[in-house]
Image 1: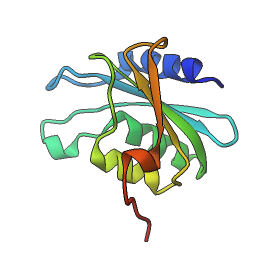
Image 2: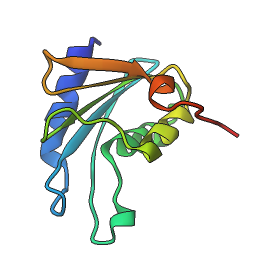
Image 3: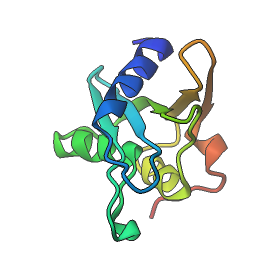
Length: 125
């Protein structure tokens, strides 16, 4: 799957986001090493600490189905380009330092980085 197609899936997922507090919807599309794609959205909560980001939602769905190796994740938002937060960066790093992170304002203006570029000195116990 190419970057644009993965980004379109992330963008399509936006409609399912639950963001009544920030009004900043985020969608993610995670590509497994075997070619499956899992989408996720941010789900906010009145107790802000209970909010979960789109990236972690996609990973939790994939891991729940037995996946442990991933190629790329695309992230789209209602407000243009969106980068993963620090918690998400560490969460993603847990599954390998070769993950490609893709984001942009639209599918024709994408940026991509390896997770190890976005999380310097990431760690796994």
